[in-house]
Image (tube, rainbow over all chains, first blue to last red; front, side, top):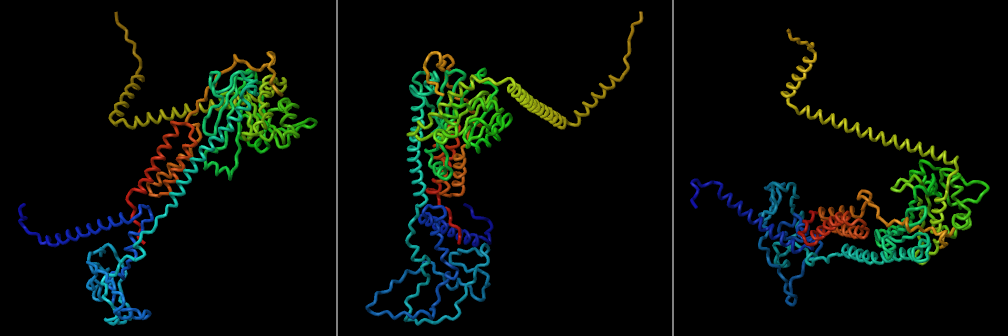
Length: 492
Length: 105
C-alpha cells in the first residue's frame, strides 16, 4: 500500500482517538458480557449488574485520603500472635490523584477516570468532589498498607440474590387448577343434561308419548342431545299435531371454566332450559300472551318487540282464581289471558297454593304469532333446571308444554277480539311497510347522490381542453336547434 | 293436563309430520363476542412489547379460558392461535431473551 503523499498533521490525534475508541468498545463488551452472566433473565429485576456503578458515588472515584474520623479509635498495632492482614491486590488501573480536580481546574469539570469513563461534553453538572474539612493525620505505623482502590462492589452483593418464582408458581398452579376444573365441570354439566334427557326424553317419558321423532339425528338410534358447547345442550322433538317441532336448549352454568365459576360466586346464576315450540301456521290464532315473574315481566314488556307493540300488563281480574302474586301477566286482551290461564294450570303449577312447591323453577312463558325470528308462530317456555338428583321436581313444568300446544292449537278468538287484533296487526303491518319503503327511498337517494358525486369528480378530472371542446359541441347543437327549418323543393 | 293416553284416537303423535333436525345457520356476526380471546390478544401483545412476564402469563390463562368456551371452531381458532402465539413469544423473550438494562437510579 502506497504512503499518502502528504502526511496529515491530524494523524497522531486520529490514532489516539481510534485507540481510545477500541478500548471503550472493549470495556463495553466486557461489561455487557458480565451483565449477561450476572443477570437472572428477568425483565425488571436485573438491577445487580448496575449496582456496582450505582453504589459507586463520585466521591469514590479518588483514592481514599490518609485520614480517619475522630469517632473511630486508631487500630492497635499488629502483634506477633495476630493473624497476618490480608492485603488486597492493587487495582491494575488505580485512580491517581492527578486525575482529581484541583482548585486550579474548572470546578464544574467532572472528574475523569483513567479509562475516560465519563464524557465531559455528555455529562454536565456532575457533583464536584470536595476534600473533607478537618482531616486528622493517622500515624504511619498504625495504618496498614493502604489500598489505593477500595473494592467497588459491596460484600453483600457478592452472592446473587435468590430469584423469586412467585408469579410463575401462581400462574402455573392456576393453569393446573383450570385444567382439573375443566374436566370435573364438564362431567358435571354432562351429568345434568343426561339426567334431564333420561327423565323426560327416554322410553315412556312425556316427550316420547307426545312426539314421534326424538333426538337430533335422523335414524332410530340417533343421539338425543346435541352438545353445542361445554355448557350448552340441545334436544329436538318433532312429529306432533299442531306443531312442526320443539327445540329445547339447556344453558348450564359454566362449571368447566374456573374464571366463570369464580365470577358466579359473586354474581350467582342458574341452569336454564328454554323450549321453543314452532306452531303450524293454521294452528295458531292471533295470540300474544306472556307470564313471568313481576320484575322479569317489566323487562320483557320493554325489550320483546311483539309484547312492546301489541300487549300490555294485565291487572288480576276480580271474582276468579288468578296466578300467584309473584307472577305478572302480559296480554293483548283480557279475553286471551282468561282463556289461556285455565283452572288446570292454576291447580297444577301457577296457582297461589302450588306455585311455592311446584313452580319454583318457573321463569317465564311467552306465546306469540308475531315472533321476530324465522318462525313467526312460537311458544316459548323458560324454566330453571334443578340438579341431577332432583330432576323430578320439574315434571309439572314440563307437562305445561304439551298442554299448551293443544290448548293454543285448538284456541279460536271471538269475533270481537279478532277484529281488534286484526286492526292492530294491519296497523303494525302498515308501519312496517312504511319503514321498509322509507329505507328503500333512503337507499335510492344515497345511490343518486353517489352517482352525482362520481360524475362531478370525473368532470373535474377532465382537462380544460376537453371541457372547451364539449362546450363547443354543445353550442353547435343548440344553434342547430335554434336555426329555422327550411323546406327544399325541386323545381320541375 | 297429562297427554299420556296411547289410544289411537287421542294420540297426539303424527309420524308423517315429523321433520328431522336441521341446525340453524348462524352467521359469525351473530355469535357471542369472545371477550376472553380478545383480552388474551391484548395481554399477549403487551407482554411482547413491554416485556412484562405477568402480562404473558395472564394472556395464557385467558387463552385457556377462550379454548374452554370455544363454540365455533374455525372462527374462534384464529383469534385463540394468535393470542397463544403472542403469549408464548412473550414468555420466550422474557425468559430466554437478552435482559433489559436496569434503569439508572
